[in-house]
Length: 249
Ligand SMILES: Nc1ncnc2c1ncn2[C@@H]1O[C@H](COP(=O)(O)OP(=O)(O)OP(=O)(O)O)[C@@H](O)[C@H]1O
Image (cartoon, rainbow, N blue to C red; front, side, top):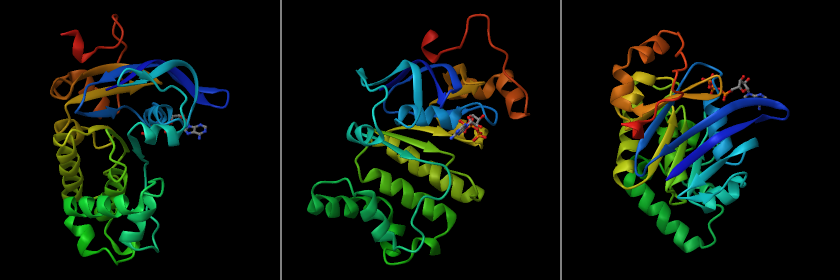
């Protein structure tokens, strides 16, 4: 569903991504792991039209979408949930949802869609008139995911959904993502909480120094001693054959 071909790019003249290539099938959950500063969040920006791509291609269902704007990517069914808290704290839950659908042309359809999303997140219906700031961290993350769903995406890019959450809430957010996958939405996620994230993912991608080091089925990555090294703050040496790929066998 999504393919990156040898992406090079960065901020201004600084190159951060030095050849990122991978493909994800749909529907699936892929977790991107790697040391701090490896370029994980930057990959998301490259996909979502927020990065200066110097060379390479981004393909969505076979269509070249390289350098398209965030607005165009939303039009193609891609949504992006950035790191941190992205709700408007003083506005109600419902108002935050309405803002998420601001690009929707048809307001009647939007209200129906908000209703459908609240069916998936009964907590949001319960707290619909509460200010977003009065929700817990996990509930706010769910509000962000729900807001992203209003646009009926095929692919969600979600950056560090578990940050600042207790283990219970992390599992709750992960369950939400699994449910989405089962409904046919693909998820590409960056997670510091690498072991827990790989345990619920279909595929894992290891990025280091702006390059794809490994791309494997998540269970294989979890069992790989080189990835164990990474969890301990070590590095993954580039293999002689280049990056591994789950489609290689
Ligand atoms: N807006 C920006 N302008 C210039 N450099 C940036 C910008 N954002 C990120 N960088 C640099 O790009 C590199 C990769 O950052 P990125 O946030 O993609 O890493 P990451 O792998 O997501 O790290 P972390 O795990 O710490 O979140 C870092 O060296 C960072 O300083």
